[in-house]
Length: 431
Image (cartoon, rainbow, N blue to C red; front, side, top):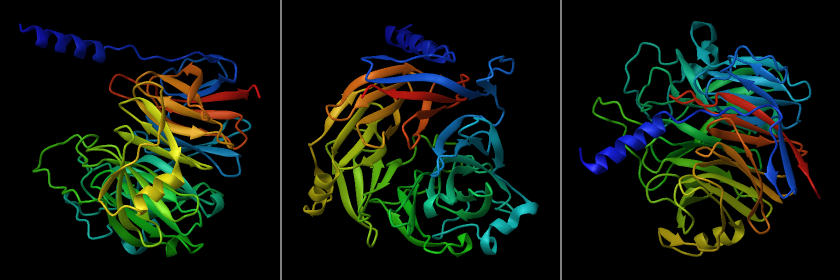
């Protein structure tokens, strides 16, 4: 057998049989002591025989993707992709309050206004009698109306194996923890963001290089309406010739990280695929201004705190920062379709840099490192690592409490088993 093939098979074998890691309750971070983390609580779906009261078996945790603290800090919400659920927990007691199921049938068709099934002319390539009878796969979420509504995007409807048809987004009333409306979206929506003035929601379609902008200026979810369909350079075609495709890679630009600038004037969208970069929209009219490059490739997540724009670059394994005003100014002052911007500071945190969050004051950035099964804390002022802690395999989603006392991290499931857990870490700061 050719030597290169032997090496290839060996590498596949190592990857396939890589050991899945689950860390113990009480696991502590290493570092210079500036930031300290400790695993104090976990919800998991791999050990039904656990005896530790802080390590709870929870069947609702099935490949959890994202987590969000409520804006009042009293609850947190976990989106489980393969469980078709949003699990709701009490922050103080750490007990589960409710499991919201994203399953739609005859009993809840009232959630679809006028039985709407699609938006912007998207067609269903899968033929069914009732398009709104489905289970949704929750991915990401964001709040609107000062935390009253939680928006949850669906990777796809369960019957749409290629994620080529219109998907949907659920709107949850956080006072009742119930779905109050489901709106159609384009194919494969992932990231979602609310404008600072609470007038618009941006739904980013990983599936075809587009975004859907929703007008949310009413207090009644049934009054929310689609405002504009935005295209980043070109709209990807959804006809795959009847073949099954891997939509995690066959996704054009694979649009991911999405954030409004604090002044509400611009919307930034990361291109995780293709040649990379960040697309910039004028948020007054949602016209595409063009793309900014110069950062690392495979841009996964975008966060703005104060004057800084932070991004995670997945494959390169880096967290980068720049001044967001300078970043936008460079884009606005240049008429070319693509421009280069080199004013980035970087730190390598490990391959598979996924979700990032910052402390309230912006002094520290935390990164979920998927391939390395760890959480890394970075001092933002000089972009140096100050702490690391192991995590259950494949950490992916993350949120930090408003008082910076806790960090919650989701560990996704994979064919190898994966983490399938939600970890709660305590946070302490030396200064």
